[in-house]
Image (cartoon, rainbow, N blue to C red; front, side):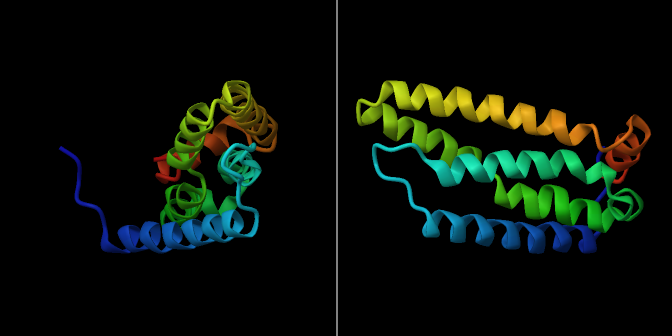
Length: 139
């Protein structure tokens, strides 16, 4: 049975999620994707967000304070990154007959995010990642 979540953790995730979602929205408004063009803003958001998520264990404050870990991890960066826009934009590209662009977008995003995570992973140790996980920051 899962223990009840502390209200401060729920609020931290909600507030962080609002901040992250607003940042994502602002970036996609500033650099909108053309209907049949490569969605650069969403691509950059997901790559940067993946990098920052993987970098969080290197932050001592996130390892030591669960409220900070959940506010930044599932909160800010969970609200910032977006699987739904990624998949919808890929679907729209396919619908527009831009199969090649859709394929590059799907695979390119996945590859770039994995590289970003691998690079960020070098700035934390296994012990730091374990401590961060124990604080709930990767939930």
